[in-house]
Image 1 (cartoon, rainbow, N blue to C red):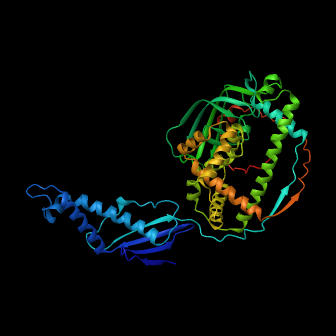
Image 2: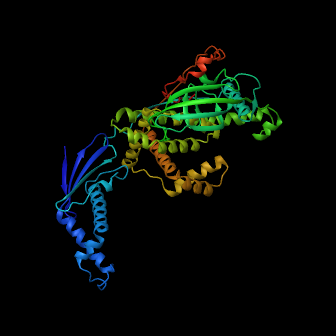
Image 3: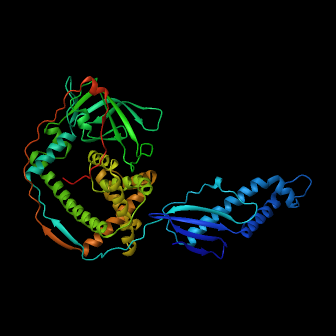
Length: 482
């Protein structure tokens, strides 16, 4: 239902209408007398400074000023009236807008007589009620470090310290790295994007340049150097790169070199690199690291339960354009979250690849979580002081071997400081909710051993198959904790 309010100060007539999920249509009517007063004021100001031949400064008649400066003055009056009226309409009606209104000033003309009418749409914060915040039921899994986990961790260290080695005269295998030339052609664009000598990692969900490609392993496994493979992908509507968002992209990959990751030997050099005298000391270090990681995992699992409780008990809709436009911000927040957990660069990049290819539903859930946690912080009066923020930055700086002041400067430059502050505030909200939660400790689920998967091979493509593009749907999957 339309809601009408007249501001005494501006005398403008403002009507607010619903325009969809988190959208308001603002209709503004500026009365003729307001336009006349603004015009008179502009000409009075102009007369004081205008230099007109034959007249002393400040003495030029209005009619002459209108003839010489009418068009420019009318445009200035119009722009000021529109800016003041739209700003006043938003403030006077307490519209909690997500961004400035998009008004096409050039298409609006100042009438010769009568009122000036215009309208615009704004996206506003969703309105909803929070559920009960005390006594949320949360399960805490008992976790302990095993020798098997330590063995896997050491194997991973060997891989991270390994060297990419040429795979001469052989076919591409899963987890290989290929050096390739690629051609990307997005729907609606005339020019192709050519990428030379790029690195492509053969994974289930990988990237060719900036394009996420699902089932990339199926496309490339079995290929040899010199071969060309093609596919088409549909980029998600919420993708962080606007030029590809929601478009179909043809991808052509010409393989030049194939490399496999040769793990480093568990020798004296590798032990020294990780500050261990012998293998036993390295294992103890890995045990401490894993114990800390398991505690973080426990916390993460309980946090996810809090998020799920909120999403299940709070319902509101978001427009697609808001989800898409906030995708970059969400990626920054996720990056801050991953770095604050002390993950390595390769681990972060691997998870960021999955996040970049996130589905529209995932983006909506993340954006909803942001609004919910923002309202919780407001209700519980939770904020992050400068001292607390600097403490979090110092912790992260120590983990990454940097000076805290330098890290803060970098965050200011790249725009991630505000996101880091939001993440710190969100963590405080979670901590507060867990203080009053009903926590039940449970045993971990027993994992049944699965039979080993046969080595993945791909049949050699026929000449016709090589020419025919393979189409893939890009249905992004949620990443689960291993």
